[in-house]
Image 1: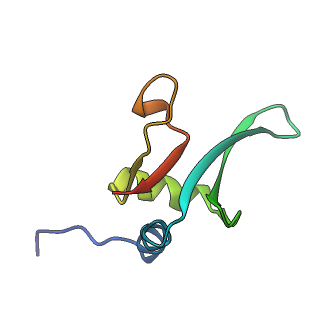
Image 2: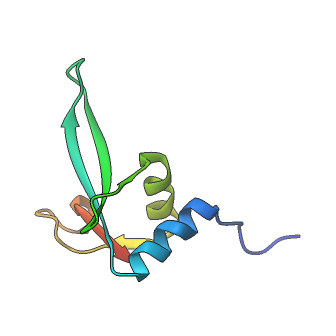
Length: 82
């Protein structure tokens, strides 16, 4: 059967949180090895979101950039429900 692609329940949960007033925010932090990793947190609750599922929600279009990036939407640091 062709048609809609199945959406992960994790992606749906992220979209539901954003519909409820949360904003998915991306922060960069240094690891002990000196690498940089992205950390995703819901604001204002402060609850963490697994980076894997946050990226999946962004890629699926379940959330969209809030337009707060200095260099346009591609550098956005927060996402809201699409």
